[in-house]
Image (cartoon, rainbow, N blue to C red; front, top):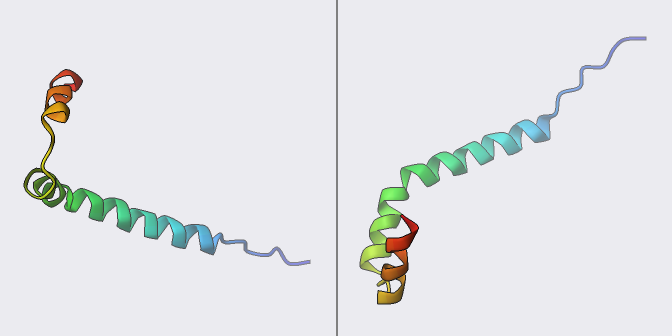
Length: 54
């Protein structure tokens, strides 16, 4: 009886998609941070709390 070659094709495809999303998230981090500062104005309370998170 011949051995069957099992390849997790769906897992490979899912891993490739996840890699694309993670890499694109890193690539767009600077743009997203710019939007956070310019478009979404941070409240004074959040700025104050940010001092303690660092």
